[in-house]
Length: 91
Figure 1 (cartoon, helix red, strand yellow):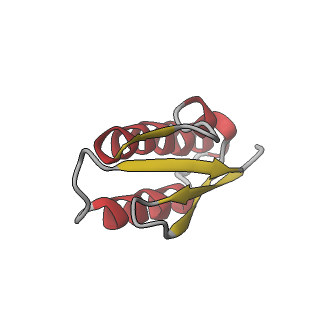
Figure 2: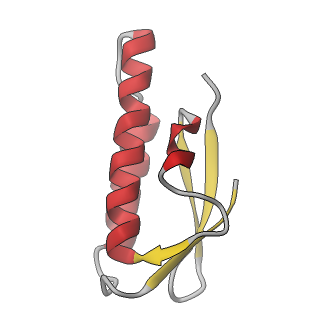
């Protein structure tokens, strides 16, 4: 299963990496796209959950990398105002 890592730029200019075990994440987070923190959080939840589900369907267990990435996204965005912008820079 092809994996993907996205570079995410937070509103303060800091960057983070978001790992997914499946390129299905790219259906929800597209390089070059900017979105509100609230929309990013929801898109990341959906995409990473779908990625973990695909691994479970194929291999019989959930991907801990996707679970960890989702926890990191929740952590990064917890203190950010929902209307600030996050940009997906690259894969």
